[in-house]
Length: 258
Image 1: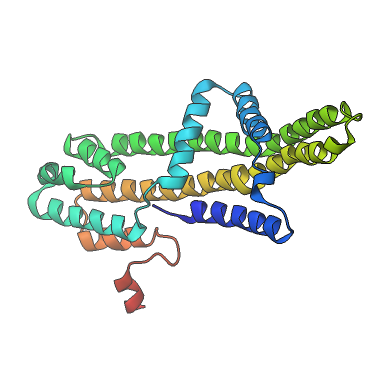
Image 2: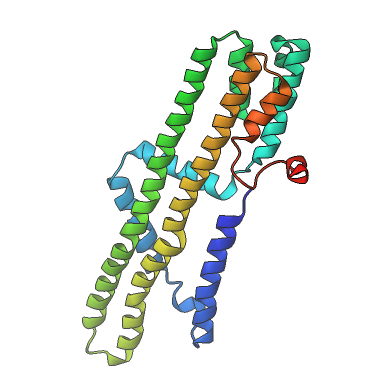
């Protein structure tokens, strides 16, 4: 699991709460049920209104992935492909069928199964590339929903503040309550800004980044399977795949050689 998003969100909210305490306030002053329900519930509601139900389902799945997905290092995936290439070169393509259950990467397993089943190389490549493109499109939709929520949240917060001020002004005959009611009214705007800038927009960026990272790994898998299927030399397979890795992610032995 890559903890960057969780650490970042916790650190950001921690900074806000620390400032509040240092200024003489208390966290309880902003943890009011009504503004929280309005901002988070209202933001989810307007996001749902602007899309399809299945889009929201996909967004929650991508949100879970952005926070909890275990990221396989590119060099580890490369090593797995090279080992498979060595086995296929030594024992034949059909020998890979027995070891596929030990392959951790699901996309790699799927590609190997297609290769072992005798799928034409061009057709195999088309199938896998179509899956990569479909993933990119779905991730783009998921990231857009989160970005839209980041745009909606501050406005929903302003709606909450307006409602709170209406309630406060209706009690002008009770001046002892005005200070508390006006302060509580602005909590909705605060949570609209906090949720947008500390949660939804950063998570939208994380979904985009994770999508590109995973798509790059899938492209690495496609290149590896095509080379395995064609019977290429495992050492050449490794060199070709290393050239596709982003700078700074080369395997340790390559860095030592450099």
